Length: 250
Image 1 (cartoon, helix red, strand yellow):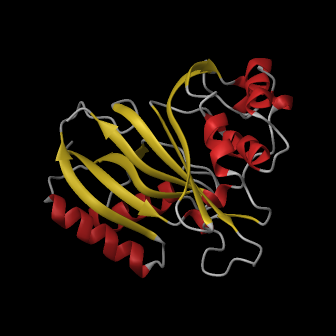
Image 2 (cartoon, rainbow, N blue to C red):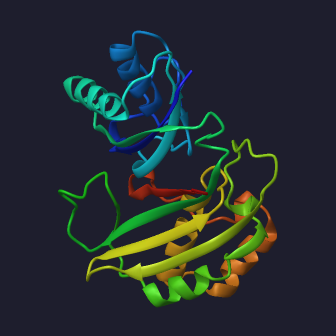
């Protein structure tokens, strides 16, 4: 069965995450139904990351096996057409034929996430459901300096959801940068081979405490060393999180 790699963009607001769930519309289900709409057979779509409810993607990667050989352009055109007709906020940016050995999840070498904070007093309008609205002024430099405590090879139990199914809480965080993109937007970039469930949002929530002056770098380090979920700051809302890129050995 020929295998196809998809590069996918979606607004996660109206979906209950990536992974198929009974009785709930998810991104995986929407695309699988679109594939059935033109290929006329059921498929299972395998994604590089299982984003949660409300999380967005600019560069999600998935693979799917089809019964027949199709031109890659035909696959993307058909999927985009069907998704648009169904009023899904999902786009197939690229489609390519790949070797059977390619696996969107297990072949991935690095995942990039971006978290957006709009730091202003006024309510959000066009950015509503696309960023975390924080009214209190945040110290971005303090947040970035504290974030470096978390970079490296650590036990991230503190920043792990109690529902996380990963076998080990130990991960290597390659990058955690905090920067101000404009006078009101703050961006947090996290890069790692893989992440624990809710890890990025948990780290962002704790960094917000640093930005507000409630925590110091030492407090963040103590939370990490505690290896206790109760030591974590509040979990940041899903609306500000984006899966932006997945790296593979080409």
